[in-house]
Length: 254
Ligand code: G
Ligand code: G
Ligand code: MN
Ligand code: NA
Image 1 (cartoon, helix red, strand yellow):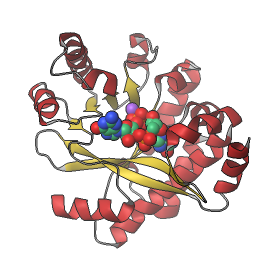
Image 2 (tube, helix red, strand yellow; image 1 turned 30 degrees about the vertical axis):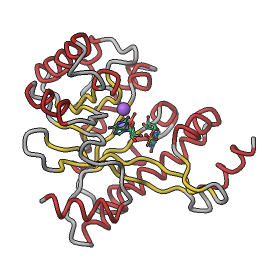
Image 3 (spheres, protein in one colour; image 1 turned 120 degrees about the vertical axis):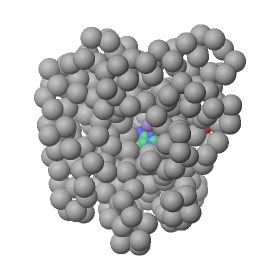
Image 4 (cartoon, helix red, strand yellow; image 1 turned 180 degrees about the vertical axis):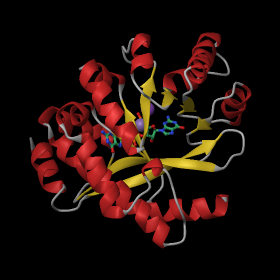
């Protein structure tokens, strides 16, 4: 309950901030974009990670309001990097199920892009299978609107939810993110390797791009490169970084 009270105040007190983890072109090693990851600078506690408070925000519905703030903050940061000479950085934002189901995602995205003068192709949304499956007809309508806007839509943690493959055909999705559960042992476990290759093959057949998360070793990267995974993300290349450090890394990486 203390946590819930503190979270209710956190937005107004500007205690939330975004970190950014690079997504790298698997072939070239160049930064293709970043994923924004929420952090909470809780007074008296230091930096708090989302695992400790996102579930509470989901339960209380706070995530809808905070999710709207995250989309705006990501776009504001893109404008900032541009002003600082870093250039265009594609930012992926995590959208929680409740925000997708209960919020006005299209309206919030449209407003943030306009407010900060952001090219829609520079914004990517990471949706979960559970959000997409909640109401398939509404999902198709929302995704069509987002596609019309020009933003990129991906499915996060792909393979761990209960999405029906039939919907991959119906939903206009641009990207799949292979869950860390299949990446962790991809070089040693033939089953995980088979699943990763199957996701890559299926995505490419459906004209989608594939990103693998949780890449921690050179060997995982090499395997995913050999099997034509488009992008990799993970500690092997970089941990999530504050905005300033990420900007410097992008300049260095060019
Ligand atoms: O950064 P970290 O590894 O602690 O993130 C843990 C989990 O919290 C991940 O599953 C991630 O998707 C989720 N998360 C991180 N940032 C956000 C965010 O901005 N919005 C939502 N809804 N979830 C986030
Ligand atoms: O579910 P989502 O993709 O939003 O979660 C991303 C989370 O994965 C982030 O919280 C990030 O800190 C974490 N992460 C990113 N790279 C790695 C990695 O190489 N290894 C592990 N174990 N976690 C990672
Ligand atoms: Mn994500
Ligand atoms: Na994920």
